[in-house]
Image 1: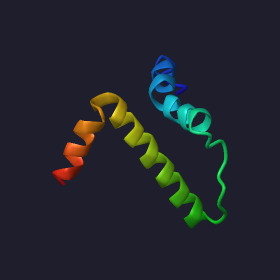
Image 2 (image 1 turned 135 degrees about the vertical axis):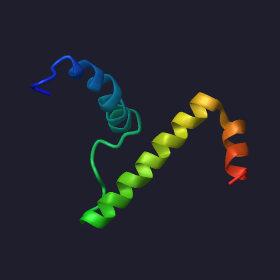
Image 3 (image 1 turned 60 degrees about the vertical axis):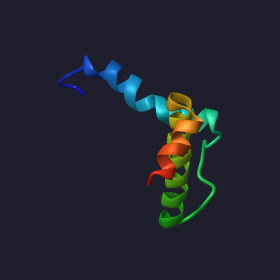
Image 4 (image 1 turned 120 degrees about the vertical axis):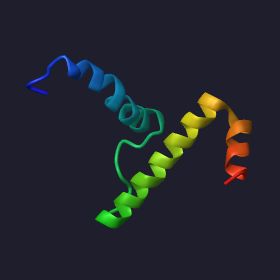
Length: 71
């Protein structure tokens, strides 16, 4: 970032928003599990929930169900 400070605002808008949403909006401010394997699993489940929530908001529940049924 030192070489390209103009990219910082773009990074904040793209990268930091999901983490803030997960931390505050989904009440995941800290991990409940211990050990690396369990924390990774907890993080993956949280990311899955976040991504499914985004898909439902963007394309709608019915289209998401149709797409999942086609898998």
